[in-house]
Amino acid sequence: MKLNPILDQLGAYPIAMIQERAHALAAQGVNVLDFSIGDPREPTPEFIPEALKAAVPGVSQYPLTGGRVELRESIATYLARRFGVEIDPATQVMPTSGSKEAVFTAPLAFVDRDARQSVAYGSPGYPIYERGALFAGAAVDPITLSGDFVLRADDVSDEQWERARMLWICTPHNPTGAVTSNSELADLLGRARASDTLLMSDECYADVYEESAHPNGPASVLQHAGPGAKGVLAFFSCSKRSGMTGYRSGAMVGDAAAIGALKRLRTATGTASPDFVQMAAAAAWGDDVHAAQRRGIFAKKRDTLRPVFESLGMEVVASTAGLYMWVRVGDDMAVTDQLLEAGIVVSPGRFFGAGGEGYLRLALVPTVAQCEEAVSAIEEVLS
Picture (cartoon, rainbow, N blue to C red):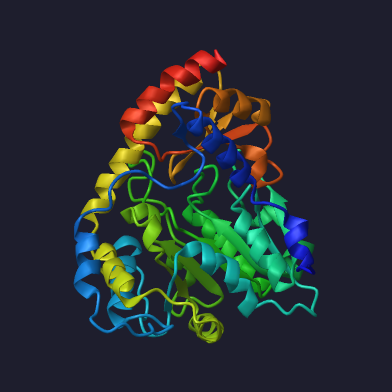
C-alpha cells in the first residue's frame, strides 16, 4: 500500500515501544509503576463530570467549530484571573479537542508548503511540534537546548528567525519542567514580531508548579502580547490542571486573525469537542480551588522522588513546574532498561530529541503512595 512518506520517516511514536514492554511485564505479573506518559491517576473533581452529565442532551447535534459561548467566556475570565490579560472571547478564543490535536493541526493553517518555510522549536521537546510541521509541508528547525533547558531568543540564529513561519515555545517545559521568565518571553516576542514569525506558546502546564519556586505561577506570553495579541497564539489544556485527560478539551488563544484562520481550517475538518464536554470544561476553567489542590499533590510527588535521585548523585534539572521530573543519569537508555526490569517505567530523554541524551523524564502520574513505593525500587536498582 502506498503511504504518506512522512509516516515512514517518523516511524513509531517512541514512548509506545516502552509502553509495549511495560504491558508485557504486567502480563507476567510484575508490579508496574508507570512514569512514562502524562496521564495522572487522581480522580477528576466531581463537579466536572456532574457538569458534563447535566449537559448531555436528549437530542444529539453537531457542535459548533467555534465552541460554545459559555466555554469561551469561561476561558477568557480564567485568563483575566490568572494572568491579568483581557481577551475577547468572541474573536480570540478557540476551544479544541485537547491540546495535542491543536498543536498538530495548527501549522496546516499557516504554512505555505511551496515557500520553503520552517517551524522551529526547542529540543528536547514535545514530539508533536515536529510531526505537525512535517505533515503541513514545512521544514523543521530544532534548537538544541542544554543547561537550564529554557529556549531564549538568542538561541535562535538570525537565519533561523528569518525562515521560521512559526516558533514553538513551551513553558512550563515538556519534558524538563523549566520555566521561561517574563523577560525571556518579552525577548522572544520582540524577535518573533521583527521577523514576522508566529510565536506559538504551549502553556498547557501553566497551573502545575511548585509555589515556593513560582509564587505567582509561571508567566504567559499573553501578558506581553498587548491588545489583540498580534502574532501570538497560546495553547491551554484542562488535562493536567483539572484531571481531564480523557475529556480531550483545550484551547487556542491570541491573535484574532490567526484564530479566524484556524476556525476556517477546523470547520473544514469538522474538529470540535461535544457540547457536553465543553460545558464540563467551562465549569473547570471557572474554578481555581481544585487546580490548587492538584498542584499540591504533584508537588508532594516531586518531593517524594527528588531525594532518592539526589542521594544517588543524579541531578534533578529544572523540574520546578509542569508534570515532569528531568534527571541527569548518564546513559539514559541503559538506566531506562534497568528500571523497566524492576517494573519502573520511565522515558529516556533522547526520545524527546537532540539534547535529551543522558536524562530521564518521569511523569508524576502514579499516586503519592505509588511514588513512595517506587523510591525503594529506584534506590535498589540504581545504587
